[in-house]
Amino acid sequence: MSRLHSKVAREVATLVDMPLAELRKEWERRYGAAPRHRSADLLRRVLAWRIQADVFGGFDAATRRMIERDGPVQLTPVPGMRLAREWAGARHEVVVIESGVVYEGVTYRSLSAVARHITGMNWNGPRFFGLRQENER
Image 1 (cartoon, rainbow, N blue to C red):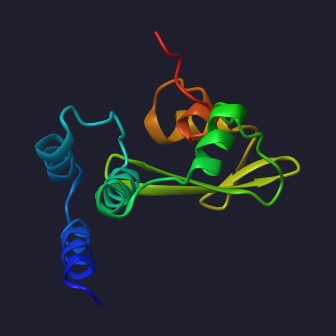
Image 2 (tube, rainbow, N blue to C red; image 1 turned 30 degrees about the vertical axis):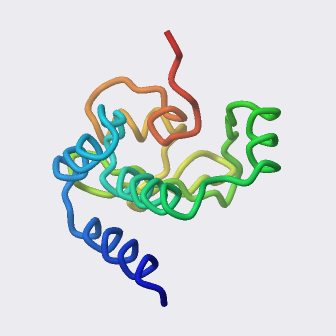
């Protein structure tokens, strides 16, 4: 492994145990204002990709064209799909079934019902679980 590869691997490895607040500080140190991700796992993955992309390059031209052509993706939950979200420091995972969504052994009618149960607030369930993009203003 080259020195450059080793250096990048070490930088990415330092992210593994960082809590969300430290990940945001690391992002700000490197790139400016941190994204609004509420999931440490997601921010960790994006930051790791960005560190590697800075050194080794990002998406190739064909992938960039495909992303630009297809635009934002909005997924529709289908039976068998597993969705996970980190909220208040805990990981919450659901499984979509024909009649609704299973969370911690309980069947709910919708993703929104699960999101409301988890947060105590009304949420758009698909947005809470990352299936919808936020509105651009």
